[in-house]
Amino acid sequence: MRLLTSIFLLALSLNLWSQSTIDSSKIKDEITFLFLGDIMGHGPQITSALNKESGEYDYSSCFKYITEELSDADYTLGNLEVTLAGPPFKGYPQFSSPDNLALSCKNAGVDILVTSNNHSCDRGGDGIIRTVNTLDTLDIMHTGTFLDSVDRREDHPLIIDDGCFRIAILNYTYGTNGLPYPEPTIVNMLDKDLIKKDMEIAKSKKVDKIIVVTHWGSEYKLQPTQEQVDWGEYIFEQGADMIIGGHPHVIEKMVWTKGNEDLSENEKLIVYSLGNFVSNQRKRYTDGGTLFKVTLKREGDKIFIKNAGYLLTWVYTPIEDGVKKYYILPASKYEENEDFFDTKESYDKMMLFLNDSRELYGNENLNVPEIKYQNKKWVLTE
Image 1 (cartoon, rainbow, N blue to C red):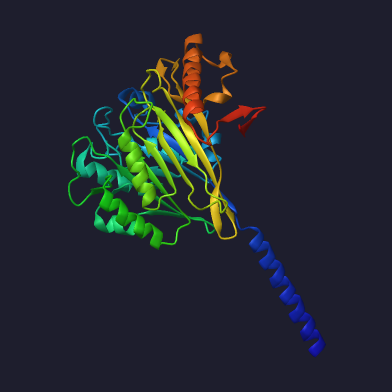
Image 2 (image 1 turned 30 degrees about the vertical axis):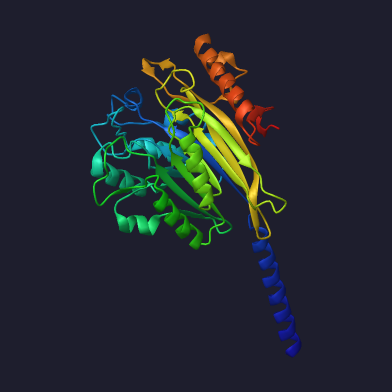
């Protein structure tokens, strides 16, 4: 009997050891983030999304050609530069888009939406409240605007915890076009004392990395302003590891300052502006944007940036069945396929955006190369 018992216990211990080995092998040593530019909602975009027969809005076609790329990262984050304040739906200057814009983002692979920007207060406190509640209802992670101080205290910073990595995400804006946020609602503003306090809170939560998403700069300027540079330095001083910027509606440079031999020490990465992800802006430099992709790696107790790259996107707007469409294209995938486009003019405009962007990034970026579509797969170029 003792022999049988011993055999049973040995078998049980081996099984537990085997199970433990399997579980530990599933521990991830990498996590990938993808960041989008400004998600706009101009009037013509709202008109395009309306199904006149049903009276419903559907933005899913916008993502028809880019869902695969958006879904490839572990977490995809975009700047929602509209309110979801309900009807009447309006574009510039005080935006309110149909809820389906956010739902279509989610269905296309967007996991997180930041909401602190210069249009946060376009529909007052009610707009802030409805935007927050709608994103909650749609089960979309978000940060930047809050129902009240209790909501902010409970949900800020946003913590991404997949069981292997803990990442804090914070979001701030330079202003709200002169429209104050009425109590009790809150919009995170670029304020030194606030940011310093928030960073201490983030660090107290034992996170691996802190990512700050900023809404700043001057519209349509291809170079970051001195104010952006100064804010970036301050935010890094408070403990941020990455800063991802938006608002100028054009792209600006990306700078990855690598760490020392310890890899994770003194490492920092800043993207000054991702440009437009989707909008009705069609002037040179504004008709596209960039996806920024970064992979974090864990080696023992060290977590550092393994690689980073950009993937250029362009908004293609053909007229189909009398309706202007807004297709977000992963541009590199279509630069060798002129026949895809309705006119040579459309193709030439995309190529102008590609060439302009590559020239800027080629001259200004540090350690952030392009991710190109080559031999039917995406390749991080050197």
